[in-house]
Amino acid sequence: MNYTLYQLEFQNGVRFGSGNLDSTEITFHADTFFSALFQEALKFGKEKEFLSRIEEGKLLFSDAFPYMGKCFYIPKPVIHIEPKADQEQGNSRKKKLFKNLKYIPQENLEIFFKGEFEEKHMGSLKELGSYAMKTAVAVRGKEEPEPYRVSTFCFKDGNGLYLILAYKGKEDKEFFEELLESLSYTGIGGKRSAGFGRFEAVEGKMPESLRKKLTDTGKMNISILSFGFKFGLPLDADLVFDVRFLPNPFYDEKLRYKSGTVPEVAAYIEKHEVTKEFKKKLDDLVEF
Image (cartoon, rainbow, N blue to C red; front, side):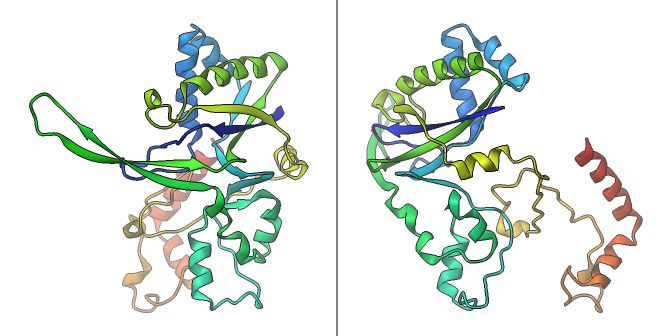
């Protein structure tokens, strides 16, 4: 596959759905982008060709990620990183900053894995842009006017979002760019009739360090995360399994206060038939 990076320079504010009108995300996901491109393909009567190229793996595209100037950000890996001994392990303020961190500069990925990610990078995205709140009024027939607030995000000059396209051949790339150009006038994110979400797409220069990560044929890395449902689902998880049906060592007084890293706890869970059956079915699903 070939890879190209496109920078989206937004002319006005954007609003990417987060469930409420009075809040907004700063990026959008690939499924939203797919839907928007499909709508553009419909305009040209090329929806079947679009779906065909997607299904045949001739076109693949990423989520949209932020960039600032020449610095491209990627999502923070969902993995526990133990900071170095000299990196203030007990600093609660730094821990909070790290926990709330969503994106890191792609060139700092190796530093991140080593536990040496510097605090100065944790607030860098504050310069990406700013939020704005607009108050509007909904008028429906003879009903009383209902005011509501709409949140938008405005990128500063030189900042915006980027996405990566993987394509099979030159024709596939040209087909994608035709739809992307059409979408740039339509807009993505926010009320399009108000001018929100319109952008200029520029083919940017992909950093070699990022290209190397894309073309590296090394082994796939899989991150496994345990969580409590009362704290909410992990937002970046590709697969989520509810395993509350498995035997819970909490109800064994000898194991109640031991963590899952203790061999006795693992042995307790794995000795039951329901666990063995679940592992067998899970292996089949993953290998499929």
